[in-house]
Each structure stands twice: as C-alpha cells, then as structure tokens.
Image 1 (cartoon, rainbow, N blue to C red):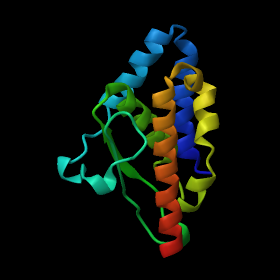
Image 2 (spheres, rainbow, N blue to C red):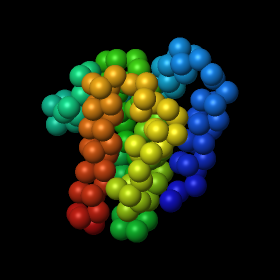
Image 3 (cartoon, rainbow, N blue to C red):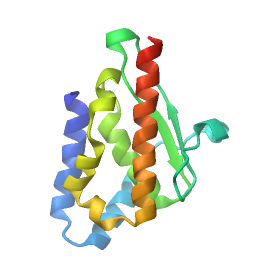
Amino acid sequence: MELLALREFEEIAEDFEFLEDWEDRYRYVIELGKTMEPMDPALQVPASKVEGCASQVWIVPRISGTGAEARFDFAGDSDAMIVRGLIAILHRLYSGMPVADVPNLNARAMFERLGLDQHLSAQRSNGLKSMVERIQAIARTTLSSN
C-alpha cells in the first residue's frame, strides 16, 4: 500500500480526533473540498458522472505510467459541498497509489475510522459507496487493459 496516501489520510484522521463536535468535523470536510482543484467543466459529462449519488458527482481517472509502475489519480467534483469534501478525502486515500492496490483498499473501513459512516445520511452513504465502486472499477479496467 502506498505510504504517502495513507499518511495524508492519517493527517485527516488526526484532525478528526482533535475536532470533537460533529458540526466542526462537517465544516472541516467542506473545507477539504474547497481545497481541491476545480474540475474542468468539459469533463463533467454523462460518461464521468457517478450513478447512485443524490448529488451530481463526476470522477475522471488520471493514470500515470503503465504496468506495475502505473499510479492512480483522479479528478472529481460535485455540486454539493459536503460531497466535494468526501471526494477530497477519497482523493487523499487513492492519489498516487499503485493501480493494482486501488481495488484492495477498504475505503469503507477508512471512513469508519473517521466516524463518517455513522454521521452521513443514507443517501450520502450510498453515494460514497458508489464513488468508491467507480474508483475501484476504473482501477480494475486499467489493470485489465495494461
């Protein structure tokens, strides 16, 4: 597993521990979303849209390298601030990982560590699941085409 991605996630986990109030944690997630690079509107097309999300969500892969050297990255965006923050957390989890490791990362367990699994609405939880499934499907497709 790529250490940089896990290190960035650990920073988020430490910040979550420091913030005891869930309102502060939600604000923090929203702030994470605001720090993301905006997605080119030209990429916000039906092919990049994540189905199963209550909000509008787009994820576009950015794979560098080939074969065992291939590294995963993606551009993502949403029209909902909290969802944009969830995308930012996913980006910190997956960005720079070897593509082969992406399908094996248990993102749900990582979000459980933050307690987000218990504090997201059912719709947001389903959307998060759909985003993770999309990311993992992209990685599997990349692996099978290499």
